[in-house]
Image 1: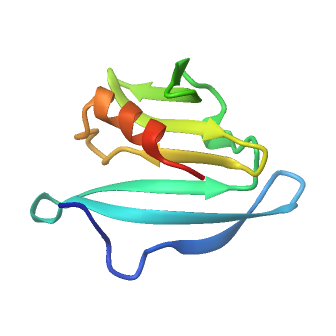
Image 2: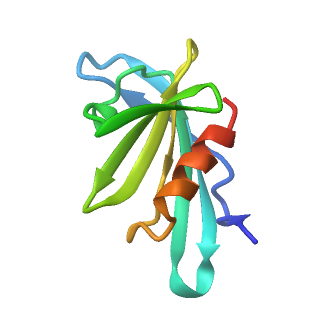
Length: 112
């Protein structure tokens, strides 16, 4: 069962863009497997184009949501989507333990 990492559900903070404008943000860190130290994240911000999400490998529509897919070495690292309110994404474990299809389905199932 997935649970929140202690003290991180959700963490709110402020990001500043290149012009030093503030953008509110949050991150939830969820435990995939605490014995192996596997955690994944759900994050959102009002910054519509954060550098982390600058170059998606591909874009696909799943369950009516336009998802931006980011990969490294064949494994999905992040899946993001935008709304009028902000941009949101799911980040895989450091070793990309969540299979690609599950990452896409997880992002498609989330609401802002």
